[in-house]
Image (cartoon, rainbow, N blue to C red):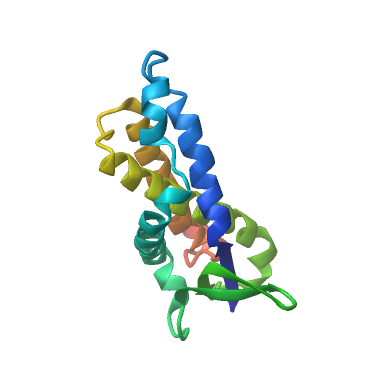
Length: 168
């Protein structure tokens, strides 16, 4: 079994940085006015906590086939990231079919999960702020969709083909 964990504070910081970047993509004449609307700050922690649960479920749906038979395969809880250092994290427990590929797939899978969590929350934030008609909203949606697609595709990484060579 492999445990993947993502510190919630780090995800929050990624969202903050992403929204700062997005705010700079707005028409220069509106940039100053929109800063308070677009940028995700500490004031949005309650929204973040609610949407982090929703984002976590969306990602879990893509990973769920790797969690069959595992007790508590998804949680947002304190996790010991180092000895004596418990931090609130999004936690996924998965079972890769071929554990030989763990060192190859886990870092890539972690990156894609982190991206999906971030993009999902940014999408919800932009929608709440009625910015879902902006070009960058479509880009965020595309990035989220690609991350989820990649997560689903990594589930089969390392599977050996069941089709004999001579039938290809």
